[in-house]
Structure formats: C-alpha cells, structure tokens
Length: 399
Image (cartoon, rainbow, N blue to C red; front, side):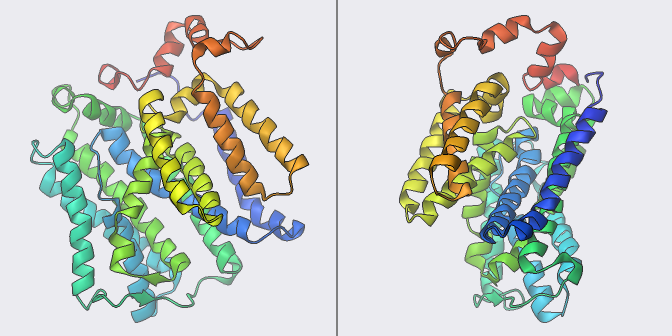
C-alpha cells in the first residue's frame, strides 16, 4: 500500500465543495426559474452514477464480470412497490429494506457460487444473468410479488421538508450517489481494495499472499447488491409503475456495464464519467426522436473506448486533462453565447468534443504549443508518481 493517505485536507475540502454545490442546485433552480426538467435530469444522472458505481466496486475491482445488476435493482424496486401499496409504508423506511434484500440476494448467490472456483469468467457472468432472469420469472408468476399484473405506486408519503416529489427524489438520490462514490473512493485506497485488485489480477496468488478471497468477494458483492437495491427502491417512485420485465430486464445491466467500461472499470471515478457522458448524450438523442442513432452511437463509443482507450476514458483523461477539459469548455461557452439551445444539449455536445480529443494520436500534441505529450509527462514523473499513476497495473505487488 502507498504511504500517503487519500483523506488529505484538500481531498476532504473538494468532497465538501462538490456536495455543497449539488445540494444548492434546487434552491438556485427555484430562484432563477430554470426549467424543472433540469432537476429531473440530474436525478437520473445521480441514479445511473449510483448503479454504475455499485456494479464497478464488485466487477471492476474484483474482476468478476456480473450481469446480475438487474436482480438487485429489481428487488429494490419491488420492495418499495409492495411495501408502499400493500403495507402502508412511507418511502424512507422502504429504502433500507431494498438495500437489505439486495444485499441478501447477493450474499446468498455469492455463498453458492464463490466456493466453486471454476465458476469464474463467462460462467459467472451467465450465472449472474440467470439470477436476474429467474427472479423476474418468479415475480411474473407468483401473485404474492406481482403475478404479471404490474404495480402502480401512485402518490408516496415522505417528510415534507424534502420539498415536492422531484426535489425529494433529487436530494435522496444525491445522498445515495455521494455515499456510493465516496465508498468506492475509500475502498480503492484501502487494504480491502488492494486485496480486491489482487483477486482481480490472480486470485490464487492473492490467496497465497494471505488475502481472504472468499470473505472479500462476499462482502463486496453484498455491498454491490445493497447499493443497487436501495437505488432501485428510490427509483420505483420515479417510474411509478413496476413490472417484472422492466425491473429484472437486461436494460439496467447493459447500460451500467457500458457506462463503467467506457468510463474506466479500474478507477472509482470511471463509472461517474461514463454515466454522465452516456446518459447525457443518450437523453438528448432520444429526446430528439433519434433513439436508433443513440443506440448506434453508444455502440460506436463502446467499441472505440474498448479498442483505443485501454482502461477507459478516465485513464486518458488523467493523461490529457487540460486539452480535453479546455476544448469542452470552449465549445460549451460558444454554444451558450451563440445558440439558443438547452444547457443540457450544450453540455452533451461539449462532452462529445472533449471525448474526441482523447482519441487524438500523440503526434498531434507536438503541434500544440505549450502542451506536453503524455509520454513527456511520464518521463518527468518520479518513481513514486509512476507507481501512483500505474496503481492499477500490479495490485498483487502492493498487497
């Protein structure tokens, strides 16, 4: 492990500043009279960041590629739907129930599969998908859960101080998102995280070095289930109608996987970057009636990121931060001044421009005065800095 604590004053201040700004957004929106859709949009961004982060702390950190995200999300959705409509629960008490049920499903599945070391790779991926599909079939055929009819939530009771429904969803989703991302950040810089990375690199070697692989996998899989479950429990209020096909379908796992892979599975910030980019662009295209174009663009971005951006966007962004952010900021400013379009549309275009700069070959950097190439920065970094930048390459050694 590295000797520098990640919880330095500067880091803590950055977390507090980001949280303060995000918590102030609804108040700013009210005072400026901006469209309510901005709050709804940000809620959706928080939802996808939380889901992608919950998947990544397990699959990205441990290397066990899971298609079972729909099982945990669907369990959370149905917990809220059943408790609110049949047992007169208010919203907030139903959220921890969704987390507990999601964690228990993950724990039970993990106890079954992790003891069999041959159930790894694509076999584990198929097993996790089977869990989600099996739960969907159970909900569809068992009347105590759904019976195939679907459940309409209607109005849901919650504390009045949270504001209207959209503000309540925003604040609660923000808390869940910040908690999930901070947990991912903390795990990555902990002994627990180094153990997970060692498992990802070579589980047998990790076990030989003293990493309690079974216990670590069960714990992180349970955290994956809990976060996905509580996020799904809140999302039930947003979608308002719950059905087995939507709750346990393949859409949630696929989007979450794409967001994490494109953003970067080996870094806590990867799912955040991927979720913001993928959801924003997809939302703008679908809203413009270009759903087919959105799907094709999503496939193209996934292919390009997989082939040309090893480790995801976050790795290249750390190599080329100012060029990408600068290009995006300039494009955003020009659109705001010249065009009369939505700020979300402007942001989507700016993010695509910033993404395009990440694919520029290194020789292009030589043509830009004052900009050092990634290799030049690598040459200037000392041994200690190189170890931090390449921390994802060899976790077994650190462990």
